[in-house]
Image (cartoon, rainbow, N blue to C red):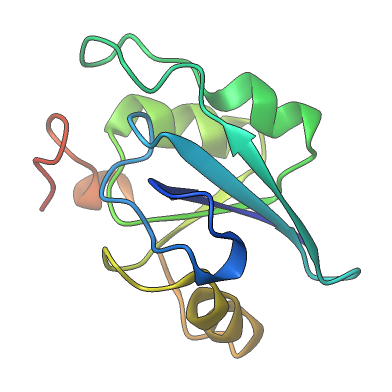
Amino acid sequence: MIICVPTDEPKGLDSMAYGHFGSAPYFIIYNTLTNNYEVVNNGNAVHEHGQCNPVQPLLEKKVEVVVVAGMGARALSNLNSMGIRVYRTIEEKNIKDIISEINNNKMKELTLNDSCGGHHNCN
């Protein structure tokens, strides 16, 4: 499985989850089969609300799961329509712990009811 976690620091598996998907400066892409990861710069991090499109780089990396502390309804719908599942975590949880929770089926899937109303304005 290929997992993407938005983060504001390129520290690999020690990076912490970021508060919002679209404005995260980086994405850590982790492959559970190879236990390898890469850091991807989010060229869309600075934008007006609802005007980002960080999805294309994720498709190119064949991401299957996004784990995020917050995400808007449009981004969530777009990812879901492409077959990418989205799970919710809390800000400042490191990626090693997130991967462990995924491996142990302890993640809750994000729904439209859980989505954000704006940058960092999540339920």
